Image 1 (tube, rainbow, N blue to C red):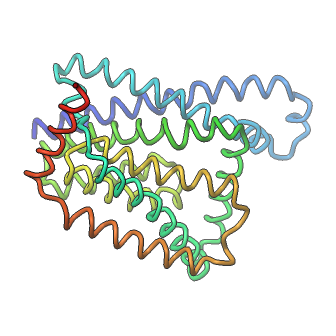
Image 2 (cartoon, one colour):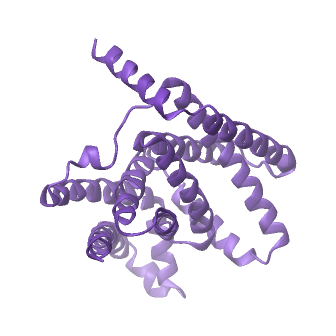
Image 3 (tube, one colour):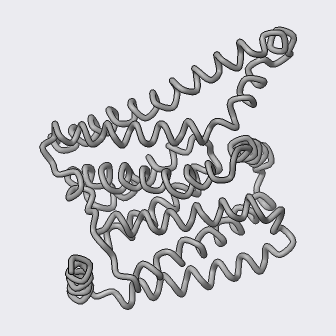
Length: 287
């Protein structure tokens, strides 16, 4: 019970910091925009929507600030916990072979999720939710490409994996059965995305990332898969206008690639040999 209360308390503490770090700059930007467009807001039928649309292009900037601020505060909190932050999150190297498998899996998983989301929107009553999701993504991606790349493909994967898999998952594993901790961390990962569509597939991705983290005992493995997953989305949304016309091909490629790489990652993994490979790699780097 003591470990469970500690896990819940630390979760609430970090989430409070993260939400505050998102809200404060958003509020400041909203006030500035409001002062610059007083007349438009005064005559608008829906002033809240006007301000929200104006803040949208800055959402990735805000996310980067919130992620880095929360990461710094987590490090400070760990000084109080007297845990070694790097060791606790398992910042351990992975071999190039498994790195290639994991990075490629992120790409194929993304294609599979895109196709499944597309099919779900065709056969399920998701019109309103999909419309809200598309509008949110359009607003968020209405900024400089390199800011998108930095925020979505670099900062977000590093921050979210360290927080969710490295800290929250490990905290709850001390207090609950591993399968319960796995579900909890995936739920938190989904909720952090703040909308139903993105939160749903983030929950599924969170389960996969949690299993990968358990298997390879390395936060770098989870970060790598998350990075290539997000990078694929970023590149497709920025440079490919529409893939709806060949969604069947996307689904087949995503399914086959995901299946093959999952089989390779689990069938070729041997804990003893893997740790020996890591040690050899570490020695080679030091030399």
